[in-house]
Image (tube, rainbow, N blue to C red; front, top):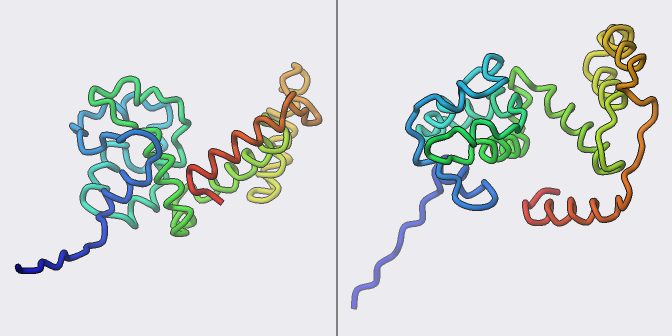
Length: 195
């Protein structure tokens, strides 16, 4: 009886992305390159690659270029692309996967949206501690950390206008049952393998 030694190969970048996307199969292999996703995206004009171009790059194994792209960072997670996709590709979920991979590899720093991670981190910190975003805190912390000169311009311009119209609180408020939210977020991190 002959023994066959199976050669183990490293997964392709495409396989890494699919395996790293939580939930059901994201159907990435079904992309027709129709462009509906990019045409539907409110952030599309700011992206250095359309989602369909990014998917072709993933298929071509262009890992570093994909993880340096600003596209996942400009995704506003509105899910409009997913609703309109004729192949039901989990586009937004894939964008989250690419963000996690870019952070893990440290390549987000080389993106034209390198500050997006800091903004995201600040936003998530408020959600984890208060259960909701606190716009004044998010904007202030982000701008002081990344663009200190813009903080004054934001405060005197749009910030003051929002405050006058009652659209911005001066202090954060916690939601009721914050511990329940923290338990949900903790379980999500555990399932997603996030630290």
